[in-house]
Amino acid sequence: MSNELKMIDEPRLESDLGYRFEYLTDFMEFSSEDIETIHGAAEALAPLVPSLVDAVYDKLFQYDATKRHFVSRQSGYEGEVPENLNELQLDHEQIKFRKEHLSNYLVKLVTAPYDLKLVEYLDLVGKIHTPGQGSPQINVPLVQMNALMGFVADAFNATIFSLGLPADQTEQAVRAFSKLLWLQNDLINRHYCVK
Image (cartoon, rainbow, N blue to C red; front, side, top):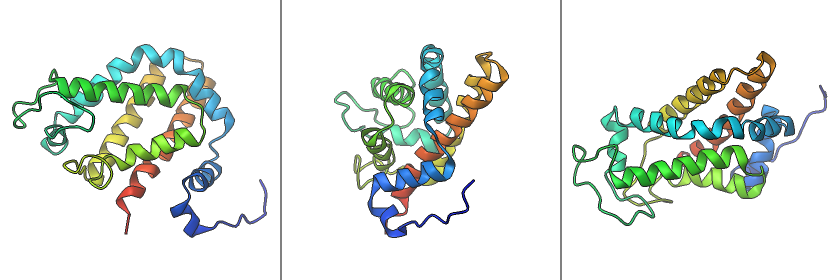
């Protein structure tokens, strides 16, 4: 471990997304080995994505505070929207549309190169849940986003443990995905701190 003090341009952390991500990955020690682990898990995780997506939506539909955000028209969805919370069911076309987006997101996490394009995509995930960036009708409170990210993190861990990998590979995968989800969580939280 180096004793050299690293100098960080703190205002730049708020204005330069690439710089922010570079700082976070360095601080968390999110390494190329972590990325290799994540990419290496793609084949094993791919068949489990539908059940993970279903588990997320089952959880979101257990609370009015989270389910209510799916009544409004979702950005990019052209079909019929439900009239109220009671009409919205898991088999609604808008929910199928949202599930497809979540599936694509999960696939991207484990297959895309970790470059600025992916960082911008992860940042967009945070932006679109606030009214200033996504649909003006959608304003998901930070507490709901944090609850969701905690649930997703636990679901990833449970999925990794279910793979029956050797202990060292399981540990490596849990640590890599944990760091990844903390990176994502920062790129969500930052959009709730806009002054």
